[in-house]
Amino acid sequence: MNPNLIRTLSRNGSRSWLGFVSIVTGLLVWHLIARYSGIPNFILPAPHSVWTRFLRALRDGSLIYHTGITLLEIVLGLLAGAIFATLVGYVLAKSRPLERVLSPYLIASQAIPIVAIAPLLVIWLGDGILSKVVICALIVFFPVLVNTIVGVRAVPTALYDLMNSIHASRAQILWKVEVPASLPVFLGGLRVGATLSVIGAIVGELVDAEEGLGFLLQLGDFQYDTPMVFVAVFMLILLALMLYGIVILLEKRFLKWQEKI
Image (cartoon, rainbow, N blue to C red; front, side, top):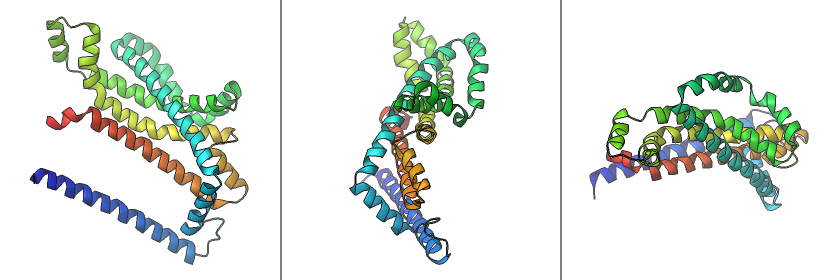
């Protein structure tokens, strides 16, 4: 068997075991604190209480329904924000004067916390799914925009000279040079955007919503159902990890050429 393959499998196996041991250790510490610290269950529930509440919410269908609503908001917001940021970023990367004109507004938009404008967006767009999607898109927009600009401008001038020497069209330069060369940086921004989109959805749901994981968080808070709050938080973590993992898979799929360099 290939020695490199053996080393890779061994390294991946070691990382998996480290992750598993870390999770088990964290659960054990949590259990010991909840059991022997004297903290009431409604403040710090034990892991088995959270697991029991998870199973109950899973059986009655409420967890699946509300998770699906939040996931839909996240996916739509992530797609809208990433697509719009990519288009704007490409235009700004090609036009420095336009970037100088728009940069103050883009930077100013990031200086305003999304929590501050979320109530306004809910008032303007209603308390339906649209306001949550827009909030997600806004929080995803900036990191993807910046990475798109950096990625496009990082394309070596020699590649443009080569394509111009063979009289390549603008579309050929875009798809054969600019997209492949800027893709690593762009996907790096998408990693950040994917995790931030979860925050955007929850911010919108916490402002005003009657469904979604943010609604479950508020419901658990009002009813002192702390295990339900933990369940909702863990589901949000799971969604963020899932989206992050999808971006990693995209990187492995579209950046295979980097392994040959």
